[in-house]
Length: 83
Ligand code: SF4
Image (tube, rainbow, N blue to C red; front, side):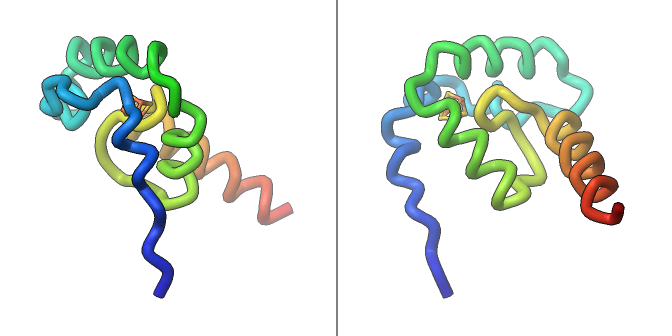
């Protein structure tokens, strides 16, 4: 079993931030907005987003995306794969 290399997270702008912002209740739009603002300053944002999409991270803000956005993208990809 391959263990993913997640050492890039050590370079994330969220290091030292309040992690409750990144794992808010789904309807806590304020925390989600604040977490996404931090992501926009992050040097590893693209890598983080790719990981979240590939690993199908079900919860939290990753790479500037929240769980609803990722679900929407996965659904649209699933639709495309069926055609
Ligand atoms: S993109 Fe956001 S969640 Fe990912 S490492 Fe950077 S600050 Fe953290």
